[in-house]
Image (cartoon, rainbow, N blue to C red; front, side, top):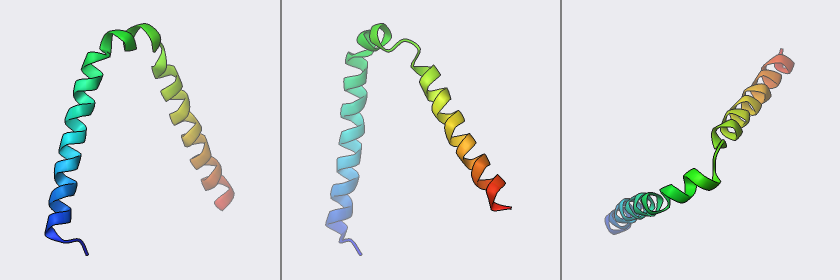
Amino acid sequence: MFSQGQLLFALCFIIAFVIVMIISYRKDIKTHKIFYKGNYKILIGFFIFIAILFLIKIFFKH
């Protein structure tokens, strides 16, 4: 499906992308602590919303 060169490029791209993202996050960690307090509440709310959607799907399936 993909040539060996394309797979090699994809692998190199993913590795480089992850490294750059880690470096960028470490540079901005002080800013994240100031401006993004309480983000875990939004994440928990999102997971609860997804769980409710699955429960509704299961409930109406039967």
